[in-house]
Amino acid sequence: MPTPKERLEYLRGEIEAERISWSEIAELQSLAKHIDPGDTLLLAWAEEAKPTKFVVTLEVNVDLNGVPPSVIDAALRSGIQRMFDEGLVTGESDAVVDTWDVEVKHD
Picture 1 (cartoon, rainbow, N blue to C red):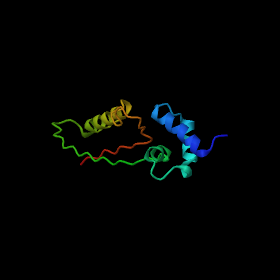
Picture 2 (picture 1 turned 120 degrees about the vertical axis):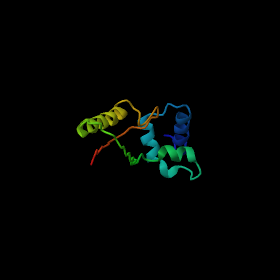
Picture 3 (picture 1 turned 30 degrees about the vertical axis):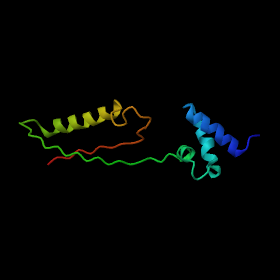
Picture 4 (picture 1 turned 180 degrees about the horizontal axis):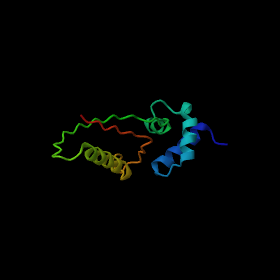
């Protein structure tokens, strides 16, 4: 049976080859106490994913020109929904949005 250090070296190779699996990441997390404090690569991969909260504030002043506020409200909500549906929030990264909420208010 391989030692923890041997497993860590194997997992390093999987990371560097860009083919580490989710189960191997879980194994790496379980071996975190065996990682050298200066080993930034393994420490970064062993860190448990914690959601990061972002708060984005957007203020929009609209000259309604007779358009009911509810139309603009719906358009803003629809636009924000499309941002999430089309992946515009995370771009081409591997990040995943767990939850989001929108609140639209007007005078």
